[in-house]
Image (cartoon, rainbow, N blue to C red; front, side, top):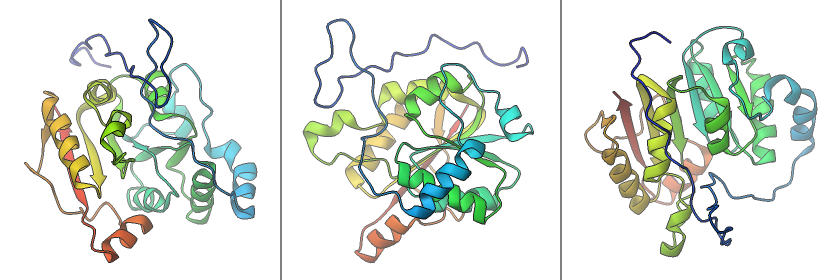
Length: 247
């Protein structure tokens, strides 16, 4: 990094009570970016995990990863939190060959599905971290290194008593921006309006971020609609996109 990069302030603590767990005294549990889901891994996904996983899955480690070495080049890098079954992720990576993408997901069927797409589309600019996104960001991603962050359709945790489980909260965003380079962006999308408004409030409260559209935006052309989104749209559901730039 050049000397012109502003000095980082101490990172905020990403701790919060875990869903359904009290935590030990003095050791509050950290915010998790996912909830474990069961799901059948199909034969094609199993083969992809076995044959392609060693090449495209970057094992979790408690140290910064040399992403230039992983991708074999030094390009802008975008990290996506929770890519689901990966169709939109693969489409974005294919449309932006000059950008490298790190997809973070814990759901094994989704990881297998995205590996299949990487193979089918012959993508070389997309790798996967199959681990909790908060820990990936804390340990594997260097400060001020990301050109962008995608958070599409995070779990809205509809019930009020579950809102504390939502990923996008003040402490998380305050930490996230420490991993974002000046001039980078964070792009969120949700189909749950109350969560969309909370996301806007949280992002607005971060002084280093500014809303490039001043309010919600329509789905940008560079974000393909997901299968989940198309199903919701057919039922009359709306989707809210928010795109903020980092100073």
